[in-house]
Image 1 (cartoon, rainbow, N blue to C red):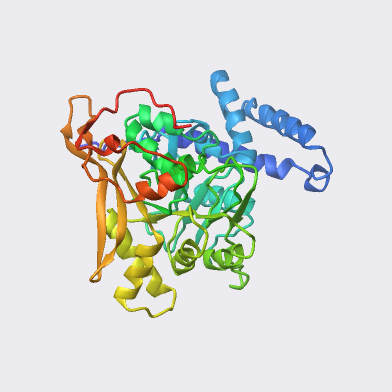
Image 2: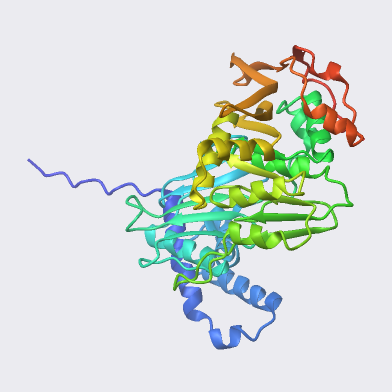
Length: 445
């Protein structure tokens, strides 16, 4: 009996392409005189690198079909100056997140839903080199000593990376895309995220200097909502924004944008959101906007809201409006100040007036699930009243959420305060009914 020769293992052509690109990239690095390259103008250096890449791709030993040569040259240049294999994803305006789970598994989030792509990296080493290059641009480092990093890329995107030995199945990367052209308030109404009545009420609350907290899970649209309602802060007011990673894009003229600083390699030099918030009180702000309250800084934010900085805003990770209040209590405890629960609740209730809860549904759609008013705290319990709510009843044949927005019939106590500041809202807006979300929206003037 003749022994059969085992068939050679199948090679993924996409991975083979990436492996060839890695080899050619190394040849380019070996061929470049780095001492002279640093003296060339940027445009000339790019031109020479492209010419070298074209020459290498055209060599007979490379054996690249003519149709693949230009693609290879383009990817090599992306490897040097751009985002390498994921450059097309970073240029796609519909992609909000890029998620890399090892060299063979790249996912994206598009329109709220995860999709697997056919993009591959050559190997774990190739992916680690890619991560180190991106992290290096942000002035950070990642290696076996420091195998985890969170940073902002030059284009504004947020990158989080974890490499072995912490990542057991290969290097992991999460990139939250920065979108210079965000979703407008009008687009959110048109897309069914909320109704015109809800939008008008939010606009009036911002202009009437109500303190607002936007709650929701990761990717639910909290920052987008904060950006949009922030548009309606009057130009005459001075705004200070405080964020861990700058994402807010206030359009007013008098805006001071502050961003935290992580500790250096020696563990020194860290500037926290709490440090920035304390300092911001000395900067004569009319409003303070904290991109995301996640620790002891919530106590300083509540103090600011209670001491003349009306109209301040923030976001909180939470599953509901009541959960947001519970989390704020927990964050007060993290500040190191020991307050009895009843006192902490009274403090929160005196500072926050309006809560907006966002959610990303299983269909990928984002909805304002409820807008609530915090009326106070009585006998240690929050007096929280829903003004508008969204109720989901199922999913239609097209994969879209089936449900409706409702006004609960509750007339907010804030109407008197808004009226005293020149923002009259008709009480009929709050009469109990189903709201029509299928109409054009124009913000209140």
